[in-house]
Length: 131
Image 1 (spheres, rainbow, N blue to C red):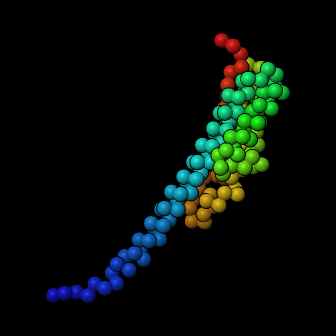
Image 2 (tube, rainbow, N blue to C red):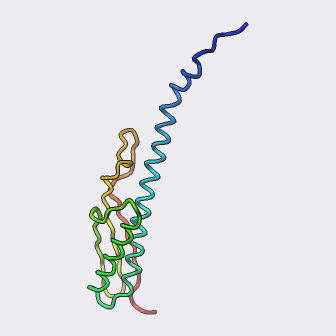
Image 3 (cartoon, rainbow, N blue to C red):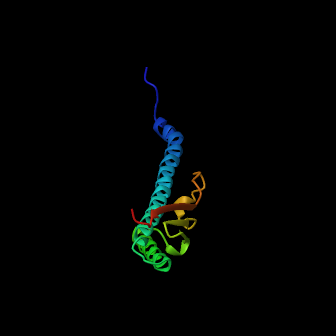
């Protein structure tokens, strides 16, 4: 005996498609967050490394700021205006703290995806004294 199975694929798709779309958009949203967080960490790392070349704390600060701005502009999706840099320089070590506000990123504000905080904070340290 044959059964009429027309429409079962549509019913199955109606059940599965919302879950699948939520999963895919969640992956995209979290991927974007990891991408932004990685770029913020790289900006902190490169800023700390470049500051080693400065002879005075003022020169180190200027070099770190210039490097952070350059790195964020090259990343493609970071805006230096949304970043705050703090540099702790005690003469023997230097720590660059980067705080980035990613609230303007549309992929981090999907209503049905619970994403991490849009404020991303990262730091990097280097030693300044010689061995």
